[in-house]
Length: 155
Image (cartoon, rainbow, N blue to C red):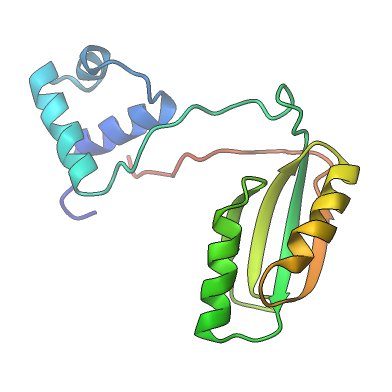
């Protein structure tokens, strides 16, 4: 982050707020010419500060109103078991996040399902069949208080 100046941080902040912001509008907000802003955005992308753009969808409208977190404990913690598990979760769209964690279990999964019956079916046919899974603990979300992909940037 050493090579980011105040303008770069403002560009990143504005794009986090609205990824569809036009280059012209972004230039107005940060006080640079459109050409200079475009060059900065291209550099920030090339250097990996910006990794992509996506639309945030409403899970309720799409019939995916149930969020579930699952702790996964593997039976072995060897590189090949980790690799097999990682490959298996990559192809499941229901698993929207997967994090290897330190502590009492190996992975934390975040899933989106239509309802508890759908989760139960998924658990039996997919989750418990993932490579190396020894034990799982499920936490169904009762209320989503805050959900954001925005990163806290210095001002």
